[in-house]
Length: 301
Image 1 (cartoon, rainbow, N blue to C red):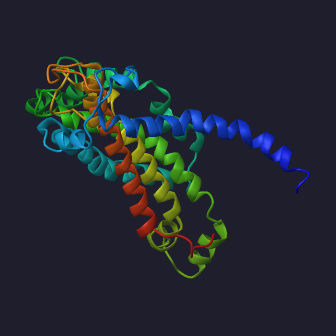
Image 2: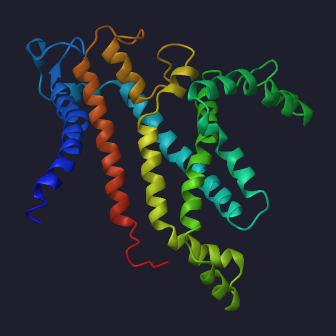
Image 3: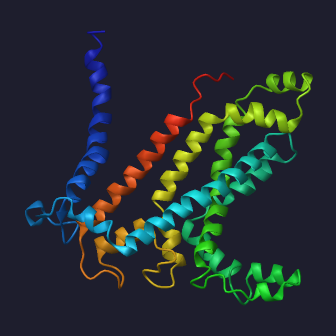
């Protein structure tokens, strides 16, 4: 072991150095920035003005930030329920021996390989369009002419239109994670359950779901991370720079750092850093709660 110590250090050193430079340093710098008033993100530290926790105090007393947090919580909760249920349903169906499994899996996953900008534009121009959109055409064909005239991107409807489009794009990604967990379960377990008289719904409830607890934690964590970084969809669905119906924390952070939008009168990169720290803590909180209440150590495949 002692003879190989130099070799071990030699192999680990590049990875450790890269980690410190690429990950640890930005984290420490962002935490420090959140305690200062900084006009531009590229300012040197001698231009920073220490304000302590004032950035955080200001955040929690600002109406637009409260609205942004409310929107992101609704996206995380309501969108999470929709995505997890639908993706699990597709995962179960595609691992049940259905014909054309690879084809359907590719079709459902297809939105994930398309740029978010292109996907959002498709929804805005070809699905929600009040003149020739797919939604209008389908509703007209069903005789629901009054509903077909609905302006889906109007301020009172745009949030739900955004949420539906985003969920559509995320289902395939989470479906693959479910499938990876389901395919790990031995077919012998289902065969034994069938012999014992358990039907498909009972097998799903008492076997599949308990054995997918670890996969569920993974899915929730990945959904939380992607939701916390929610930006492009909100930006594209906003009719103005700061539409309160669709604004989210990352969009508000962008406005504060780069001075974009009518709601920002002065730039403050430290204020934006504080938003990033809060979002990071939210992700850590969700991850900690999942580990606390969802345990799969006692389960065996």
